[in-house]
Length: 229
Image (cartoon, rainbow, N blue to C red; front, side):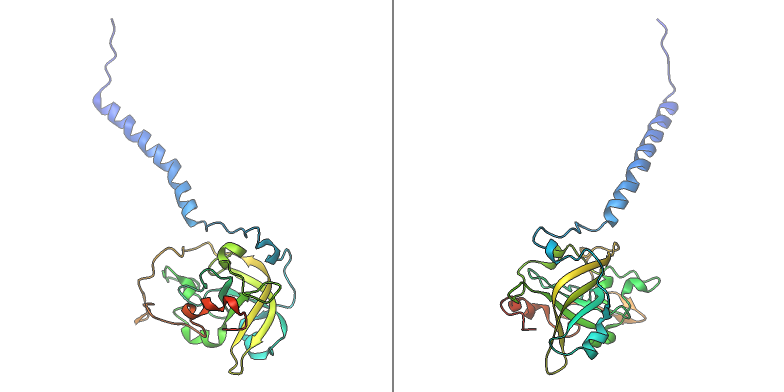
């Protein structure tokens, strides 16, 4: 009986080639999946707040803070961010930043894992950021997380319809009724920890650091009164 003898070296080469082929087909899929954001569709309850068409006449955040009066109905455009956590957990509220302010992802070579905190331009957030609260028909802050309700994420560019609520000290809050998503950010994930990074010799660690006009730890009780900031 004729026996075919295959050299051990040839068998080893075949195994190596097969292994490389398997890796080359699976790796791109894993990378593409990692770069995609989580589900960005609104919840069934949130669909009524998502606008199908882009509203006209949108103003930047800074302009609304400066020029709008209390009670004015406006359309505002900006990007979600302004802090490591720009959300009010469990509530339909978040901070919106003027497009003139640069996020870390707008700076070439910056590898900040949470670019939506705008830690390189915090001085501009005083006038370039405002709190947005989605309210129900009774004017009450909606007790649903904005990310799940509206299908939005950090650094998404959104256009929002709403009513300005302005305090005597000039602080402006937008009581929102509708949102149009102009573009969605698909970069770094919010799950990537921010241990603090150094830009131009400045350390931007964020433990205990508060940006802008509102503290998220104090914002959650506002669910019972949309008028509180």
